[in-house]
Length: 481
Ligand code: C2O
Ligand code: CU
Ligand code: CU
Image (tube, rainbow, N blue to C red):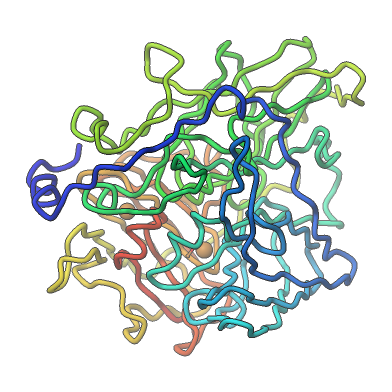
């Protein structure tokens, strides 16, 4: 779907052919799924999150140079309660600026951690997060303009879980690490020395940078041991650019129970699911038959394989349709299983009445904008000193996102929205729930209201969550006053 002219232009600008990319051997596949430590900020506990460099054993026999938040790669799962103020001290022991952006948190611009909230090398910053939104699976990552993609690639990202102590028991599995399992899915490349090159150039930058190896929680195609019952998977696509099309090798059904902004009204039965960069989904899979399962994904439709496969190594296919393995699940009969049936509806699921929109804004995502042919929105590449839009507190608007060619995951800070149409087609709220990333193809419309403030000193961002596109300027900033 990539425009051929653009491809030729990209090629002329210099093709990037990767040096030796070492493919992971069978030895590193199937290691036990790492379960991230929890940084628990509930009940007024405080903690510190520091960006640090590290060495991580991802490939056997190699220590890969990585970065992370208080650990060598990625960060802990941060848990916070609705109705509380979560506090933590952010530090930076790297030799470049970082930030900690709370992706999906409904929080004022001043605490949102975007590109203006830089934490310099050796500096500290206090995060004071007033949590008031339904329970949800969110994430956090660095967000320094022109450095987000590289910093996330090397590890500055983690999951965040919002709990609501006042919500009625929703009857879902909630034994962390046992039947309630975080899965941060990413693709990475490795060189023969074990390091993870990040060298987006030419088509690898235009289409976004992808890897040939699939990591879950920092391990290559790991194996999770799960109880013989219902298991809740909180899945984050923490990849820079890859879109996943998940399904199980045996074709089994599962239920989606939540999306970016929290629970759906009711479980939705399905056997495949797409997840774009930045999106989260919660699913419940039934393992009560004791059978092992292999989680697969199709190749990314944003690539024209015949044009790009020689330049962009793809994950090794295990099926005729090009599907590759993400991870496997084995059932451990000794683990405590929750086998209560899924509730028919979720009483606490968000479905805010956003009221009538009073304004429409149009955002045309441009693969070429400005004098330097960067990327942009409405013809304008991102500029830290240019405020692109101003919104009013409490007003509901329709944002229309226009794209041509490849699909772009469009993200808005500081709120969650309803998707009205996607690729020109109406979207059923029951299947999407509240979102903060929507995969935009063709014409896409969202209904959005801003209930938190952001001033011109620290505005909110909206951008494509293909991180190379974001860093190239497919981003804008707005105030809410
Ligand atoms: Cu996930 Cu503006 O970011
Ligand atoms: Cu965000
Ligand atoms: Cu994009």
